[in-house]
Image (cartoon, rainbow, N blue to C red; front, side, top):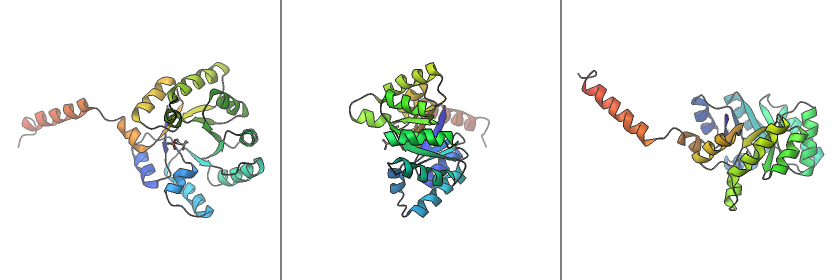
Length: 220
Ligand code: E4P
């Protein structure tokens, strides 16, 4: 399973990269806004900075909702760096854009997926990734992880190469549940990734090992 970080924050991306297990980055217009980036030119420069930190796919989202606008933006984004994957929403125009971009060899991440039907259409259009939003489904008392359990077997059954990128992850437990469900990729905030390291028995065990070492071998 690949690990992506879901942020546009350069420090967090660097920290995740330093762990040695980072495979890519996802951003969206809200995450970009959080970084206080102003102006299109600065945004494009910011994407390049991200691409220079991580040797892997970096999703950058289009904000147009019409086919022509999406294609224009997608081509501009893809030209920035070979790591860029163009993020396109699952709407009618988006679907057409994914098909067009796939034919042109431009990678896409189909975003705002909330149902197996949406994921199926995106896969048929040739999306590189589909991004089911788990946390937002949980927010409305639906079952986000169940969506991964439903999409993965459909893709496996028909042999789609489209990767299931579990998004809107809100916890460490979500990451484990997505791994169990067979997600190809998870994209997560840094805290939830770091949470995977935590276990009280690890802390207690390490404390005891160090104590025993220092009271014998390491005695001065
Ligand atoms: C997906 O790529 C999105 O950037 C993201 O995971 C959305 O997460 P949220 O629902 O926590 O905003």
